[in-house]
Length: 308
Ligand code: NAP
Image 1 (cartoon, rainbow, N blue to C red):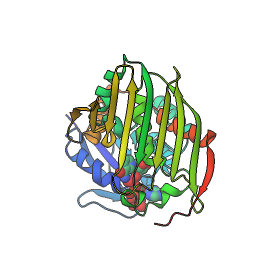
Image 2 (cartoon, rainbow, N blue to C red):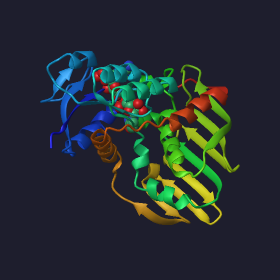
Image 3 (cartoon, rainbow, N blue to C red):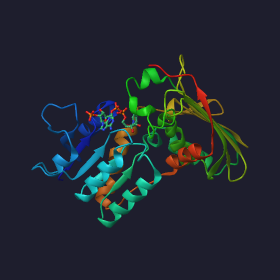
């Protein structure tokens, strides 16, 4: 078996924490190049720009784009035009139109394009989807509350236009609920709290209804100190389902049903290898579409300046 020769673009937190170990553990991939303006990796070819890699004598079959979302479309377009398969970190773009453009570009060239939603690979998510599939939903509560100073130190891009602010983590919750809930759901109202010195929200409250009218309430907070919450509760007519720790623990009526080792990024690379082998793509924008809806429909409240 010839491994897929892979380049990583953007050697920041997620590339180091998750992509590098997942690639090293998967014999279907070989890391052959790093593209980063500032960082290098011993023993791996290094380029400061993707265009330089693509015109070099280093051959790559695929690229994984681990930059912030704002430069993602230009990088993905360049890679697809050069005939490379593309993995997009979440969110898959800064706008929905960009991702649609990439979908078409990949399809025209018969290349694989993967929008990655790592939280969907958390151990509790698929069993939650199965348990909910036949049940009538009464209400859903999403609490996604973390301390931006702990989890995103120095990430200025997160506060810029297109950086999504608190939706950078909260899109993970939306990626889970769009996977596990049996019906589509729609935003009815929202409030975005935007610091007076930033472009993106630091807190948000969103009220959705699903297609049968069940309320879905999301409370998102980037200023949570103490215990952090990445929790989703679903009340049904015959019991309550709860996912905690970002989907790593699943409870039914208070009883722990599933927990296990972190399998999210190995799961993403397994899926990427299979998509490439099958000549297929997986392009799902539904979590990003809900974020776009929140930016379209919500009221805006000016919050105190955020100082790191
Ligand atoms: P990060 O630590 O800030 O790293 C991003 C890297 O992208 C930087 O090291 C930078 O490397 C490169 N880059 C290229 N163009 C850039 C630009 N215009 N502005 C800033 N950096 C640029 O961010 P991260 O946490 O790894 O997040 C990257 C993406 O992964 C985001 O979309 C995020 O939502 C997603 N993600 C993050 C996490 C997490 O836990 N942090 C989890 C899952 C997904 P050079 O300066 O060396 O080029």
